[in-house]
Length: 137
Image (cartoon, rainbow, N blue to C red; front, side):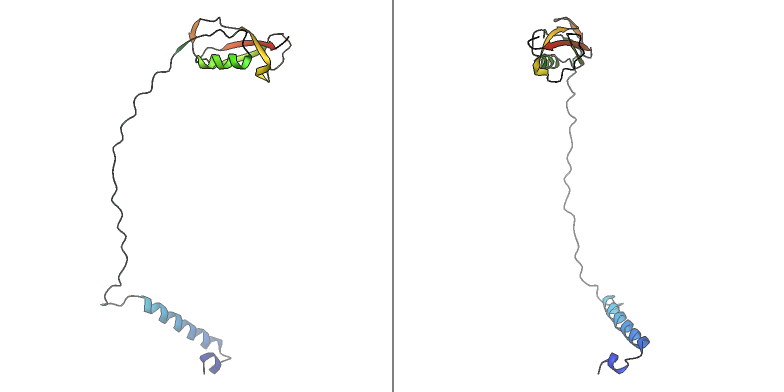
């Protein structure tokens, strides 16, 4: 006959019995004094290879001056590409007709003027304005 069947109405006795079982199980897990230690798995870290990094070579100096190319007569997109290939990135654009239109599709516009003449040597951070009109106007 089981313990619960023997004492069906006594919850305290059942709880005490359950506690004893749990404590016995835990006690079995604790190493006893004088007993040989249980074998354990020891993880040995892999040897670490050290490498010496070499400093990268010094970066090439960015040119401080650029020669302005001639972009008059080019499709506006190609004019911008040509200026940027020359190292000139500070570009503004405007409608050459004076109507204040925005140059949304650059391939539909033709460059009619540039604010800095072609062949001039300028600081690469110089702002250059390109004027353009729609092709066919």
